[in-house]
Amino acid sequence: MHRWIRLLLALGAAPLGAGTARAQSADTLDLVVASTTDVHGHLRGWDYYAAAPDTSRGLSRAATIVDSLRETAPGRVVLVDAGDLLQGTPLTYVAARVAPRATHPVIAAMNAMRYDAAAVGNHEFNYGLPTLRRAIAGAAFPFLAANARTAAGRPAFPALRLIRRGGARVAIVGATTPGSNAWDRDNLRGRLVIGDIVPAVRAAVDSAHRARADVVIVLLHSGLNEPASYDTAATGLPSENVAARVAREVPGIDLIVYGHSHRQMADTTIAGTLLVQPKNWATSVGVAHLRLARERGGKGRWRVVAKWSRLVRAAGHAEAPEVLAATRAAHDATVRYVATPVGYTGVAWRADSARVADTPLIDLVLDVERRAAHADLASTAAFSLDASLDSGAVTVAELARLYPYENTLQAVRVTGRQLRQYLEYSARYFGTWGTTEPAVDPGVPGYNFDIVAGAEYTIDLSKPVGERITRLTVHGRAVADSDHFTLALNNYRRTGGGGYAMLRGAPVVFDGQTEIRQLLIDEVKRRKRIDPSDVFTRNWEIVPRGAATRAYETMVHP
Picture 1 (cartoon, rainbow, N blue to C red):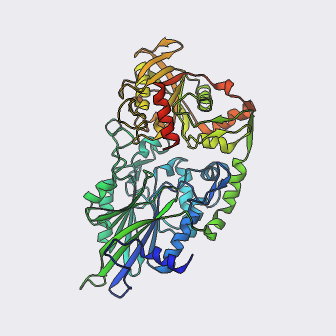
Picture 2 (cartoon, one colour):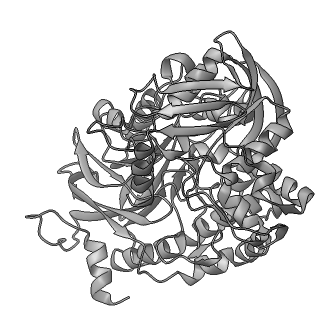
Picture 3 (cartoon, rainbow, N blue to C red):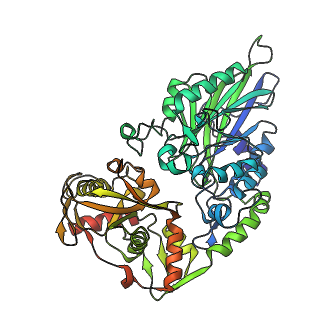
């Protein structure tokens, strides 16, 4: 990279009127904080699903940005992450389940980049606490979570870390979303409890100031202020998205790096606190500048007198050799694993229309769930509209793209009333036909639109939210509120994840502790050859037809 580009990166995007970075002196200090969040195992420029290069993201490209910052601001760079690192790609699955290594590849990459601290993300718990502990044991930096405690009431992770940069004492505080109490209940119950972020951060920030920190940085695995994805009243859990509240209610914080929501925020200030959110999957690096000046008569103390931040996109940057070297063995093992053929199909299957029409590819997932759980009904979301099975060999990569999460299969007993509520809640994903509402509600993620097999139903989008299920039968008989059915679903949804509060208290009748992706792989292996006619049953539809077409066009060509 040319020297002038490195210099621009180090200076950051100063606001108009701020001028260029001033020369360092004995009485001034420009501290640079580089940050990532929601990396989700994206380490290298490679798409394991498509078996093709990915030039837009990854820690290997983020590392080159950080190297440039360190070259132009020697001894003054802090590198942090706001959580969700150890889950998200086939590489992280292989590292946790197929070929564990002495040092987890995500940790190896971060060690090579010399991270100073990371917050614990909710997806860190997906593979269980033993897997998380093994990963942390190999880290040369701490994972922080001030609001996490063991069942005995002891801190489960450090709350803060104190480091020195350019002569200033820098405190880094971390906290994580309490939603994990619900989403990973089976992994945490009786072992770890995650409390309210705000009071825990307040206490940790107070401790940092008592330790005479000159600068306080807070890492939050928590969105800005978005609505919680779960019913806080029903679950009794504090909200998951409170970064704005922390800025307003906890004094003495200079910078908050936050994540979890997979959005991005280059530079905003709330109650005097600077906030930044890099884009997920190491698509960008947050670069914050904190200008410090010596306190007069303060015996060497510093105070922050100016601050600003920007996002630097990873696209276009070369991959850092040290990160590639640290992750090469894990990468090679993953490439071999995802290329493994597990069965055969004579036709192509596609998921591009799976949220507006019944499709064989989603019915494959639902059929596997119903059979494994011996359930009347089954539900799943169409997680990726890019998922497909090409004609010929069916590989692990194709099935992993179809079901990318580490969800396990469970089943609950629901009433007819709960089933209708479930489908009505799912149907809020769409806008109301014939109004000015968007065809697809931008506030409802696609992974929160569930499709159910075993029941026949119609979604009428000309009706308002809550009144859209105009036909609901099972085996040709209209469903009554008092009816009972068993419903196979993933563990995240069973705990009410995504706001499906109507399932709260539903009795669990099956808990196989097996990941749904693995069930898919095993089923295709068993069948050897799969065909859409083996699994496809057209059991649901959207009306009017124009509403489905408009929603499809919105999803495919947003």
